[in-house]
Image (cartoon, rainbow, N blue to C red; front, side, top):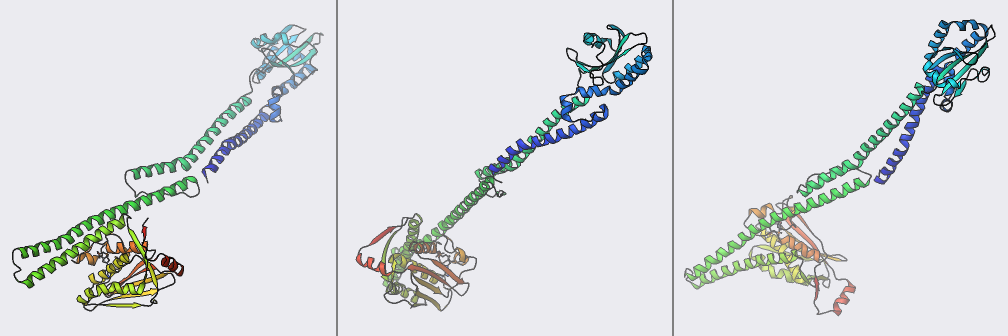
Length: 512
Ligand code: ADP
């Protein structure tokens, strides 16, 4: 659920749930008290009536006593001359917040069950003859001391008018009504508290907690720990944030890993380069000393020494050249001079240059081309020559067969020209194959031999091919040989016209 929805639901819960719960609870409390009121006061009534007219309840409290006393006034009024009888009736009435008063004539109080209370409302007693109005319900007397008065008038045998009063104190709330009010207030507070607690727990679980986890993860990343993967929740903005955070972490981790492996590779390369430069330098120094000291005392020997010095210097030059080229390509400062060249003629020219070298090493170089003679490629001839030399150079470097063989195959399709260099050399281990185009990567076998190399060759080759808009891939079987295949763009007809117009001009692109 989205945070927006969550907040809407929270607001709805805050508004609705307490109202619903309070209504329900009130209903239950009311039911309970109505039941209890019905039992205690013998009143079958509804809540509204009770709340609007609680006098009904007070009236019912003494209903039975009223009827009993009425019978006495009608049929046995002499009983009322007996104070003990009056006392006993009064005792019963006191349990119902009431007391008894007997008045003779208009103002002589013959009996009073509670002088204290009576003193405060004495003046309000109705006159003789009022009993027919509201007899069993009584009349309500307001003022400082509100009371409900039920009046029974009778005339004694000697003709004196008497009034008997049941006076009920309505100053206090009935216990049920009191309890009802207290319970409603407590329930209201409890329900509000419960709803608030539930909401806080829910919001904490769904918003605050995941944000806390994110904060911990962010702190870990700030401390350089990129391993902590946060659990991802689906379906809301926080889940999206977690996903983005995880993508960022993986990206940082990837960059970090790359940087570490780059640093490691740079260190390895530095030690390789040092070694590869030191070996020919030592030889050059040794042969030069031999010449200076006169050890090479015959012209043949001197020539041999000089040739060796020259060869070693060339090897060093190649190494330095490769390093400086790599630094150019690595810093993306490479300038290309693209031209259209007839591919077959161009490749034949390339292999012509190296065939002698291969022949000397006993390696046969084959060439097959299925493209027409006039097929032209759009390439920087110098750089593609570097690519071919590098790949064939590797075939020679890693050749372990007595009858070494290198084949250069050319295939054309509509847009591209595919060039494959295949050898029957040592092959590449399966685990090395996916990495051979990485910078500074050297296979196990290459590292184990004294063949030299920086691990930059194929990385440079790949960059050049990609800058030409081509692709490169390798296939190899350990012990049997390797095939490196790359493509360069073929000149299209329209492009041919453009190039013709531009004939002779050099085109330069700066790699971006
Ligand atoms: P290096 O300077 O080590 O030759 P490269 O980038 O040219 O670096 O090649 C990377 C690795 O690929 C080499 O170290 C080697 O293990 C492997 N490799 C490349 N070409 C061949 C091949 N023709 N035969 C066997 N192994 C090869």
